[in-house]
Image (cartoon, rainbow, N blue to C red; front, side):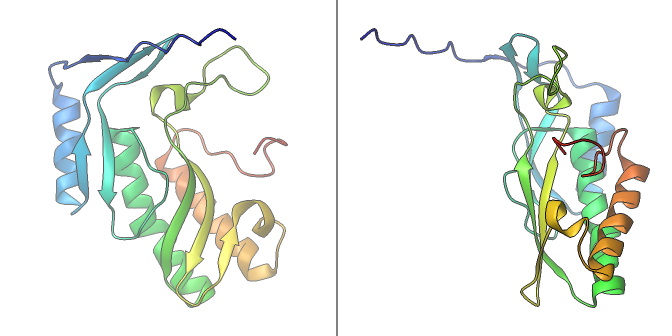
Length: 177
């Protein structure tokens, strides 16, 4: 058996921060979000993580968060705080204690196409479920066609996401979502 050749390490670059990046980092700090700026990385094949951060604390635990562009991170933190949490209180009468995600950076194409996904640029996050302090776990996939309150909660957080992100895909978009 042939030994597989290890992939070369990503090329790390430190690019000068633009005004937009500095403003975004300041926005995260002003939102009391704990984060670590990450070095720019080029993974090859068009995949990269540039002007990215790792969110450490957004006020509610979130799983599987890796490199995210700063604007995505700022919008995600604001969405969790000002979209998801108020919707859970108003519609479900409970608090969110965890947001489960399928992750952020992943060098992959859009399913069924040769075009790279926004995940390949650390500019996307896939939401899996919301865990409530009363023990409920609302999966996006199952809850989308669940009971009335669950459907309403997911629709409200979806609509809230549409106000903050350029692209928001839900289970009714296609079979992959």
